[in-house]
Image (cartoon, rainbow, N blue to C red; front, side):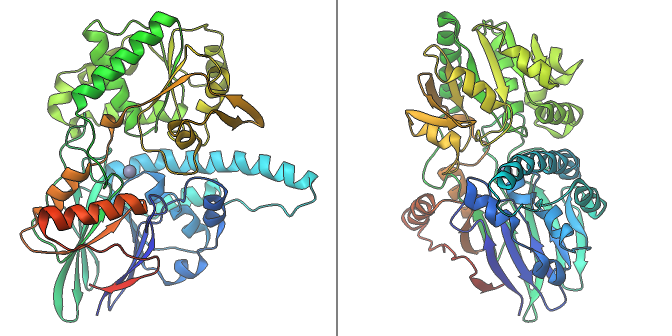
Length: 466
Ligand SMILES: [Zn+2]
């Protein structure tokens, strides 16, 4: 009998990890980074040597680090087998893993300097750049729809999840107790209304579905309303001469924001002259999206500047790409009226923290939160209306106004999750993963009320037969 064990992203939105054991192989479905606070960092440091020894192959749905970010750690701890992903995901991993190793290396250096002074034991890195190189060597990339034999009794197909470049729904056909069983993992399911991405594919049948539930408790506001609100905040900030800070994930959200800014510019509704993309990684990823524009939603690409020319000029005239630290610091010399897009998306690191330090205390400044903020992060504190926050050891009073724009989400909302999971021809057993407990409880109730279906919320470590 084949079985699955829920190891991570169980009752939370990061650290995605599921172990699938068949008669002939042990497959790890994802190995994601834990994000949000000191506890997450401690979990990222735990040895994966036991898993590395027993796992024969790793499958990853998409490049976001909460799904892929601990795979180099698994390699560091001895995993030598194949890593399966889509072609787009592999290109993203080349950027994201290298960046993650660098960022974690820098943070470790700071932490160890402090520990050294305090006479505390020094910490080891989670993984090194050479582990990333080795992990990339072990990657095997496939197109959507291509069937891949993983072992004697498991076959894999990736379907387009419409979430970010290369993102996939994972369809796994396995033998279990002499029967063919199909496991479908939603990965992160895209929001059909979001720009640049195609609609998520709809697999026809499944015996078991692992369904993400990030936004299981709500529907997003209509995109048109969100764009109006976005335009209005930009207009007000311009009128008051304040800066606009947009913390954005380098992958997906940044490109979407640039797309909308480009549209507003073409419509004559964007007055700001200084717009900075202040993140080397986001710049690199945006270039990658631009190169891969044929795999994006054709209509959106055709109706925007994404179709042609030089990156910055074609997608958003006037966009300035801040690659170096000097470029980034120069932004602070502009007094008011700039739009600054920088990572990290939840304000847990990256250049956005420097801009927040400069701007949070200014009443005419606007912070636009356009992505999910996990509990324990600085972004979440801002969304929750914190009056003061800690940045680089200082306590900063928040005078800037914080606007949360829900409609830009790259995740399906509750209705889309129900719609997608309700369209299987078969009646699969559904397990809710990748969501915080309250969102999951509400989605579970919605399944009961609207579809008359009982779905399960697994416990950490729970094992289920396939
Ligand atoms: Zn994702």
